Length: 105
Image (cartoon, rainbow, N blue to C red; front, side):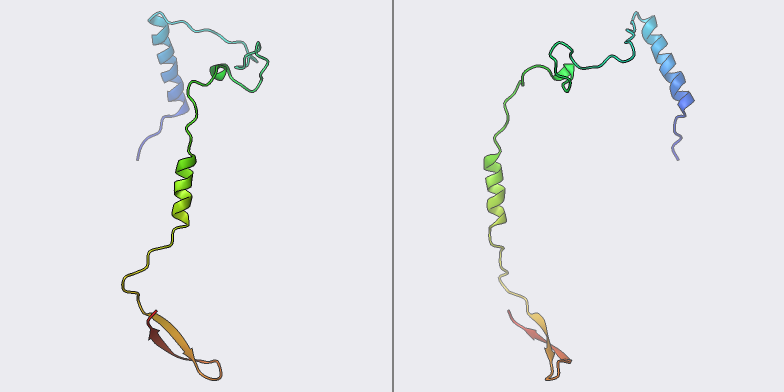
């Protein structure tokens, strides 16, 4: 069975990684509580700063793909070369099951 890391082990590992980062010359920028990732200049509260530019690529037209799929849906199914016989239940005059017979389709 695989032993999972406890929260304490994860905390120690994160602390050790941060110390290594700081020793190599890295710096940590503290962000005040309540600061949002939205751009206050644009006035759009629902977009994040990461996605505030224009689209880089145009959308792919999938109408031909959808038409091909729809055409496949309405194609008749293949029929068997040698259709299998089908079992049919015969009833007597009173509606009681009598026997099974095989019929060719």
